[in-house]
Image (spheres, rainbow, N blue to C red):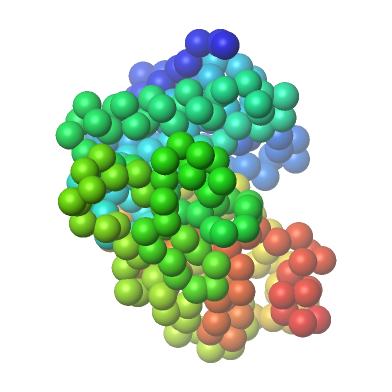
Length: 251
């Protein structure tokens, strides 16, 4: 197994952030993501990756600073854990997760949490993988979100989704509303791409980028990194293709 690298303020300018490697068309907002990471490092964010040219990394931070609508005081929150391609099945995911758990214990945390779903879905943590390593479902939110946790002390309070995350509605009653943050590098450019596609279909668009942790924690659905609403109602947390967008909008 290869060595691992922890990103920090000193090396982030020269190190890749994994996701951009598979984006030859330049639609990955790596600059926006790196700026976002720089602002999070002082808050305790950890971005740990394998020293390879591929998607093998974990990103986590104190749950109080998570840009997701969860209540998990004293826990560590996993933003993303991704091992792709030929690196799958070699123990990288297990190694990264074990390091996260060990670091959380060393810091006196109550445990580790992550947003997932019963069915494996893009941009959400893999439930089966987490359960294999001791995580259990501690909360659910419509239409398919689950919060999984690994508690170090059985007496610790159960992490949960904030009540606002159960709303699944936004004030924009007409057209498409896209709420997102720069936590994921793909949202920077794809938010504009989706907006232009919708406008080309004659659908009005409203864009809202979360600019602080407090804003993101008040999100109207559990997937605050990228969430699409149509006529005021949640439709997906996934970045859609133009064909998928037409289907979502019934066009």
